[in-house]
Image (cartoon, rainbow, N blue to C red; front, side, top):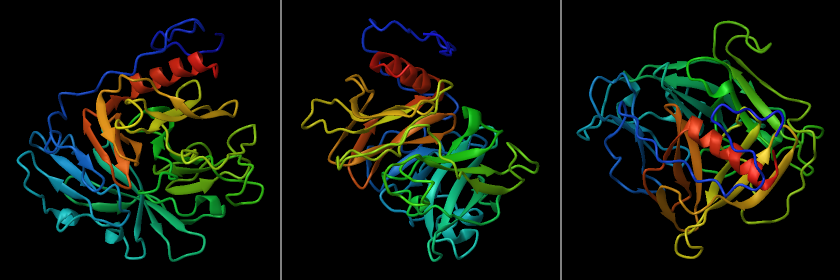
Length: 343
């Protein structure tokens, strides 16, 4: 199809077979890590640690069913690390006491920093700020505080399936602005009522102006993200928030729900073309996912060290290798979009 980016030889024939889910991703510099052998149940997500930690197998524990619990760091032998703000765990208020809630994480493999979006929920609307922590437990704010205008950006807590991931423009670590795209928002009315046209937080953590955004600030879109308004029914899987991408072709999506006990391992989720505004809920992502999960909980992709890790939200189990390379995941989204007619 004309205009499709072919960086990974995407097959554009409408008659092709359903695309295969990407293979699991196990980069040698971060696998194995402490906790990679464990299954995840809601409050116990183990993710690989900093690449410059100095010993093999370090990891970070994230409580994915809570938005206020401290993160903990371990070495490859499972000993909790206590340097700096890792002592007794890294908490939302370690940068400033007013910030009480985690919103999103992004582990950057080039910067060797964990970027975290924190919220001060005592303001109305909420106030957001980006900070970082390194392997030595040094915490720094990398933006000024920003109180949102659009109330569709409120309550974007880590533990909610309505909270979009934090991603980096172009999907390149070490450079570029960060974004959080909330499609379930109305910019004409600055709220979360239908029809939705989407609102974005764009965050510049650099020392210079990028994409017309001043250094160390964040801004909010006022004219929407997509050209078509979206109306959503009361589907139990109707949240348009959690996704991988966007790809170079503007495709977003991710499996977000499935239960191996009841639907034969077929995960479902959102697939959309953010350029055209076409979004489809509850589409099948195939049956060959290289990890196992079950219960009524949603699963959520988190950008981490150049890849995507999946963890459950609000309980549920995830086990196996729930890690996909970013390039493979984006190629798969593009192929799915062709198969479903979005590209």
